Amino acid sequence: MRPHALIIKYLLLIFLLSACTRNKFLLRQNVDSRAINELNYLGKTKEGSLKFNSGKIIRVKKLTVLPNDSLQFKPAKSENIQMVGLSEIRSIDFKDHWVGVFDGSLFGFLGGIVGGCLYVDKDNDMAGYLVAAAGAGGLLTGAIIGGIIGSKIKYRIKSKTERIPQGKTDNGKHLKVPVGH
Image (cartoon, helix red, strand yellow):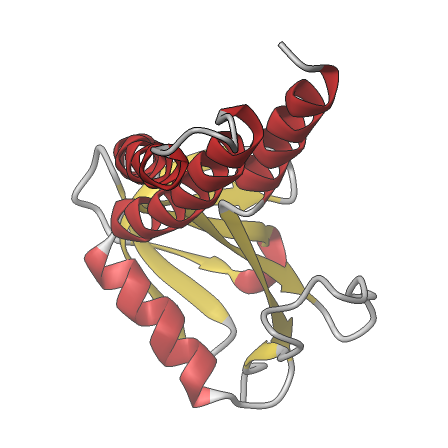
C-alpha cells in the first residue's frame, strides 16, 4: 500500500467521524420560538438522552421545553412525567439514522472516488469505470454504516455568562431558550 494513500484514508476516516455530530448551543435568554419548536419536535419524535451537570445521563422520550425555563420528559423505562430546570442540564442528545444514511452516502462516495483515483492505473482503458465503481461501492458502504451509526444532534445548554466557542455553533446561529417569565 502506498504511504500517501494510507494517510489519505486515515484523514478521510477522521473527517467522516467528526462530521457525524452536529452541535447546537441553547442560550437561556430571550425567546426564540424556532429553536424551541425544533427541539420540541425532536423531543416528540425521537428518543434522546439528558446529560445533567452532575454527570448523570438519562434516556428519555417525549421531551418538551416549557416556557418557564424547565424541561418536561418521560424516562425511557417509565411512563411517569418528570420536570427539571434547564439550569440543571448540560446537554440534550438525539440520534437521527436517516441523516446518518445521507452523511454516510456522501462521505462514502467521496472516499470511493478518491480511493479509486489513487489506486487505478491511469493508462487502463477502464479507469473511468473503475473509479465510478469505487465511488458507487463507497456510497453503498457509507449509507449502510451511516444508517447503523446514525448522526448525533447535540444541544448544549449555556447561560448568558458562559462563553460559546467560536465556529462551534449551528451555521453561526445561536439558538435561544427563554428564561422564566
